[in-house]
Image (cartoon, rainbow, N blue to C red; front, side, top):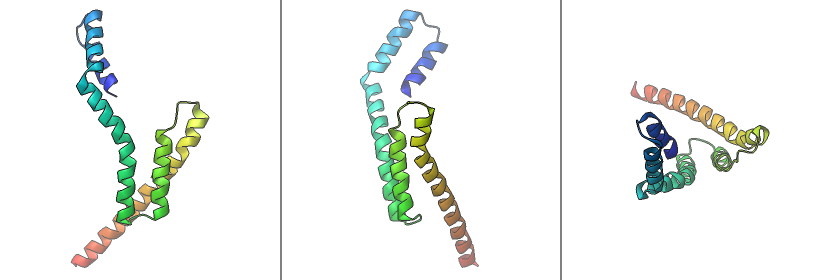
Length: 121
């Protein structure tokens, strides 16, 4: 992710090839860049755990859907670039769980809004 930003900066700046190479080498090996990368990578594995806890405790969705979401998320994160068929098969669980989760939350939000309107009248 950060590599793409640095490459975009270098490609649009008026630098010689040597200056561009020096900038990329320095920015990729800087302690700040490494820290951002470490936080980014750690967050990818922390996010599904936090989502699991939030969904589990909220009880807005069934427990089985919470588990399906986290398993699908982790499986999708571990999917290698190994051909279209394999990638689609490994991502399918995540796609199904995200779709079900979105539908479930959308419906529960609508019913809660209706309850809040009825309560205020």
